[in-house]
Image (cartoon, rainbow, N blue to C red; front, side):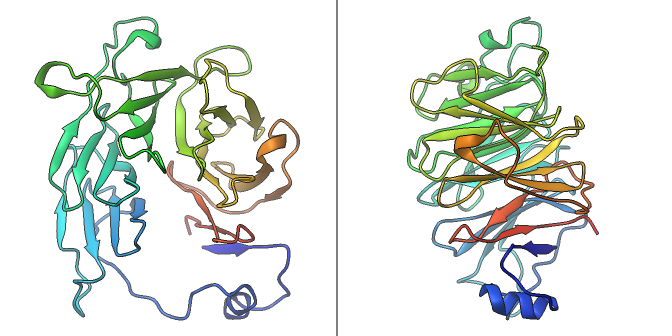
Amino acid sequence: SGCISDTITPGGMDDIGRQLDIPVSHEVELGGHTKPVLALAVDAAGGRVLSGGLDNVVKIWDFGGMDRHHRSFREIEPEDGYAPVALSFSPSGDRFISATGSVQPVIFDRDGSQLLKFVRGDMYLADAQYTKGHTHPLSGADWHPMEKETVLTGAADGTLRIWDLNGPTALEGRLICKTTMKLKSARGTRIPVTACIYDPDAMCLAAGTQDGSVQIWGTSGLKQRPDAVARLGGGMDVTGVSFAPSGRLIAARGMDDTVRLWDVRKLGKEPLWTQTGLQNFYQTSNAAFSPDSKVVCVGTSV
């Protein structure tokens, strides 16, 4: 992985870490997955971690109760035969959402017991606006940062969906979607969603797409069309989108081995900054901001 900033002077990773005050002096390896890890989540208190891998397993780690062997205290398989692609804790950390390669997100309590499963959409309805749930594999999920009963999901069916966890249910108690937004390419055709996230203040939400665009909606009076769109160029998948804690910047990780940074208020213009040569082999590769929004950390595939 690499840490990127315009303010560092040449030197090794240890020197860079010291200059930027990055907490890299101590580390513990959390092992146990048999295949690459695709998704991570940390609760707001910083005491509990989720990891999901291509082995189809989500491991739940508790730092407070961990012994010197550093093992997870529980592992679950959210959906038989499908790998987790996104994990997100509720604001209080009492629950988490898991999105896998299936079409149905699932809500668990913090110890991994299933609480709620979302409805499967009707794939034979031509207009995704009228389906009650996703019809194609999931690609993202994020819990509303302030509303404990609201979550966001995205999928290859070209939709973003907002769900009220206290909303109406279908047969077998499956939750029905509250709001649907259909994503379109520059030519007006449907495009799969590849990532989705709320900004820290929930003033807007963002989605990455398969054609290399980042699309943003304001959350007040959601419309069918996005309020702003940026395009990576080259038509390569956006594999991750991340807002800075300040809410003023957004980073997009691309399958074209790049990370790009935009001012959220000027998303339609050229990015503020682009870094190339960051190898990316996985559809969930992402980027993360430091708490002061001054540093971006990017994982690579080698």
